[in-house]
Image: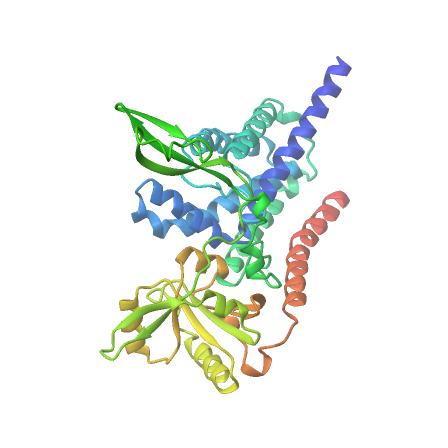
Length: 415
C-alpha cells in the first residue's frame, strides 16, 4: 500500500509540473504579445468565415492568455486544487479535439499555442495536448494528493495577485511594444539574413511532365520524358514538393514605392526592397498596416522625424498595406508630405506591434523600434540603450510577480 501511495504521489507531482508549467509558459509567452495571438485568432475566424467577430478577437485573446497563465500557476502553487484541475480539464476537453481538426485540415500552419516564442507543427501540438490531457485527467482523479504551497488562508490573495498580474502584464504588452520580441524583426536582427535559407536545406521540388498517348495520360520525370517521340502529346508540366525543407524566417517582406501622377492619382511603382535593405545610411520606416485605423494622436512626432531625416539625408518611408486610393485620400486630408510605400499587411503587423510604429534600420539590420507613444525627439534617435531598457523592464515585471508571492509565502509561514 505504501509503495502504491508513493508511486501515485510521484505521478501526481510529475503531472502537476508538466501540465502546470506548460500552461503557465504558454500563457506567459502569449501575454508577452497579445496582439500576435489576436492576429492568430483572426486567422481562424477568416477560415471559419466569421470575420464579423474580429472586434472580439483582442478581448478573447487577453482572456485566454490570462486564464492559461493563471491556471498553470494555480496548479504549480497547489491552490484551489479541485477547481483548478477541473477547469484545466475543460480547457483540454475543448482544445484537444480542436487541435486534431487543425492538424487534419491545416487551416493555419502554426496554431500559435506558444506564440512566436516556440513554433511547433499542428501535429506536434495535437500530440502535446494528448499528453497534457492524460496528465490532467490523472490530476482530476487524484487532486487531493496535490501538495499546496500556500494555505487556504492566503489562497484567495495569491489567486487575485496572479490574475491581476496576468491582466496588467497583457495590457502593458498590448498598448506598448512587447517587452520580449521573438519575431525575426527584433532589434539586432538582419532582415536580408532572415529572408535567406541555405539552398541545400530548402524545399526540394521535382518537375513532372504529363503526356498523353492513345487517350491515356502518363507522368514522366525530367530524365525520361518523351520530348522526341511524336507519338506522345504534351499535356502539362507541374512542380511538386518532394521533400519539405527549412523555411526562411521572413518570406513576405517586399516594398513597392507609391507615387502621385500629374492627375493627382496615387499609383504603385517599382519594387525598392533591395534598395531599402542595402542602404548604408540610417533608414527610417514608419509602419502603419492600415492608414484608416492609424492612431493619429502622435502623428506630429513622425512628421518631425521625417523632416529631420530629410534635412540630414536619411531615407524615410511610410509603409502601409492600405490601397493607393486610401493613401491618396488620407494624404489629402492630413498633408504630411511622407514618402509612401506599399507592403504586405501581415509583414507589417509582424514588423512592429503598433499602428503606427517606427523602425530604424541600417543595411537591413534593425537598430531600434518604437511605438507611436515612444518615438523620441531627433536628439535621441540614435541612442543605443533600448536593449538595456527592455532588460530592465523584464526584470521589473519579474520582481512585481515573484516578490509579492514571496511576501505572501513568508507571512503564511509565520501564521
